[in-house]
Image (spheres, rainbow, N blue to C red):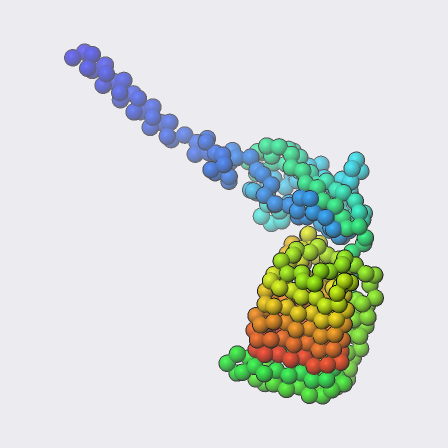
Length: 359
């Protein structure tokens, strides 16, 4: 019986030890299964420009996103550095309100055609005092030539979502109206058909002085875009591609198609600009043109030597500057402007979201 009592004593002690072990620090075993735990080291989850990016504009800023909130006192020019070889880049470091996104803004424009290295050292710590397990290093290279600045489309021209030379025609219905968040106008013609049922937040300008001034500004913007030096040669179709900022030109063929989706990657630069020089026509076949990493539609310009046709259901970004005419087929969303110098602009139950005036 004595041995039985001893066995019961040790069995009870074992159960007590196991229970006490389960009441320890919940972060004791923190790790990959608990990335926000107090003892888990922080990490870098993304960086812009992305690693190995090329064609980065000289006005780019470098943005790093951490896996958890960081101690602001440890995110500084000692722990977040950018360098071209052995030459450090002077800049200012900022941390967003969540303490998870750090931005390095260079004091001067980056040098063209140059490789840069962005580094987060192990001196960077989270708000519990945990340092990065190892330094984070990412490299990128700037564009071979200076990126084109935005093209200024002044007031009142930038207030137009639709501007035609001869006629504006909208064939939408009350049930599915075209909606334009800006002015609709024509000059030297006077005909604006289909408003209503088409809707707009601005004003109709039919052959008046405001439309005439806007047409003059369109001509200036068109000639500025067309006058840029020839840029990267465009293939016949750019659907399925991701393009950094720059000037792009049709050379081997006069026309350009977009079949499928096109991504325009600003690589962290809100002033990044795309200029597409198209000798003849632009045609889309549905799909979506989208901007990422800080890109803005007011900084995208499609200089079109003839006419543009956006296929049914297309989502388009940027200002269409057409020498002749523009057609938006059913259900198009244009985050930009449709501006035609000579011919007509035709709409069928479309949405035109006019971006702010820029640059």
